Amino acid sequence: MIAQLRCELLKQRTTRLTRALLLWMIVLIVLIVLLHSFGLSPSTLRVAGNQPKVYGWGTSIGALFAALLGALSITSEIRTGTIRPTLLATPNRTLAIGAKAIAAAIGGVGVGLAAEALVCVIASAAFAIRGIHIAITAGDFVQMLAGGAAAAALWAAIGAGVGAIVRSQVGAVVGLCVWLLLIESVLAGEVPSAAKFTPGSSAGALAGMLQSAGSLKLVTPAVGGLLLIAYTALAAGAGAFTTEKRDLG
Amino acid sequence: MVRHDAMPTSERQTWRGPFAETVVEARGLAKRYGDIKAVDGLTFTIERGTITGFLGPNGAGKTTAMRLLLGLARPTAGEALIFGRPYRQLDRPASRVGAVLESNDFDPGRSGRNHLRTLALATSISDTRVDQVLELVELQQAACRPVRSYSLGMRQRLGLAAALLGDPDLLVLDEPANGLDAAGVHWLRSFLREFASQDRTVLLSSHLLAELAQTVDSVLIVAHGRLLAHRRLDQLDGGAEALERYYLELTKEGLA
Image 1 (cartoon, chains in turn yellow, purple):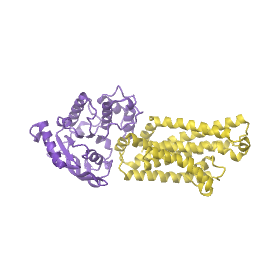
Image 2: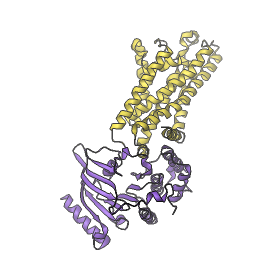
Image 3: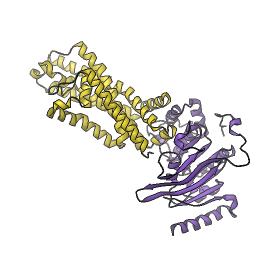
Image 4: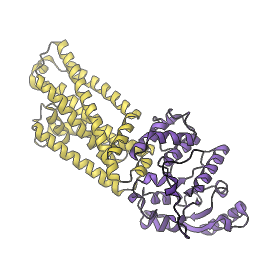
């Protein structure tokens, strides 16, 4: 397993996809956080309960890009054909997919940290410029960074599972974006009692911060973490199972 | 030519008795995709130290058969054994089998050397061996450039380098001469001859007769997923020309 993991981490470092993903994430975060921190009225933002509408984006965007990192680690290999040498070197497919999920999770920690830190810096600067008191405590910031990194790590492994099941690059990317940015928000607005248990909301619970937190009461970080671990096991397990069964390469 | 020295020679040249050792074996191997029988009951064996050509028109099932041999696809019937086992059950398969199925299985932005390093890590092979195979296929100069900038011939050689990483006893190559210029084909031929002379085995496919006739010891002729003939070339009087006549006759019957 160590050998396969080292191989996957080297692949992660030597593909342009990783850099492209990070760049897109930074662009998206800057846009969204500036839009929300300057777009929402001062009276709204002064209410402490509304500040997650800005700060909470780090969790979901971090989770999204970590998931994309995981999914692309598989779909891009299928697209370019490198999956063939990969599976010839490691014919045990559960091992191959498992190594990809773990490598994605390791990369996901970095993605999650970067996303949360960037959001914190931009949002806090914007609040300071507008003279709005930041109601978020030092403890909240720590939870945001640590919990956000952990949530992104788990989401990266979920992404790897999704990539293994879907196999199509476009399908996996569109599916993950639609789920995290659209379906999760719709659910949070329409059925908040159920929506707090979704994978996206669980990430929010772990980080203590989610942009849809206004309408949604998050579960505790411990419950959120456990839920997310369960979703990860399900996605990665299903990914390994289908890859084991299918013809590939 | 660089020596293959990852495995001691004494282990490779064990005495194998009066009967040649079977390296590849297909028994009633079949693969259906819906109504299409891509491979339809192939049975053959390949012996150690030989170069066998898988010969057949486009769409004859050569690539599918190779994918079945290498465990990338599951047969609908029959079985494919390499060194007596299904590929997916081999211990450290890279040290037994090297394979190239497509000439362009690379991440375009990754350098040739990094491509080999990823595979070397997965199979616990040292970076020294990576540099060795790069030298062997004469790609040292381009090793650090992204594969995007490689010509088709260079990609073929990089694929071959990847297959050779584990210093295998069997090479499985799908259309290895595609995209090679005359010098490249010549280089490949002498490389494969040298490889087989060390008591190792090669299975390669081609849809072009001329490429094969001068390289192989025997041919497996397939059409429509079925094996039409398995012949040693030294049993055919008249060499390349005879092979061509033989092949055309067989595949014409096969089509009828």
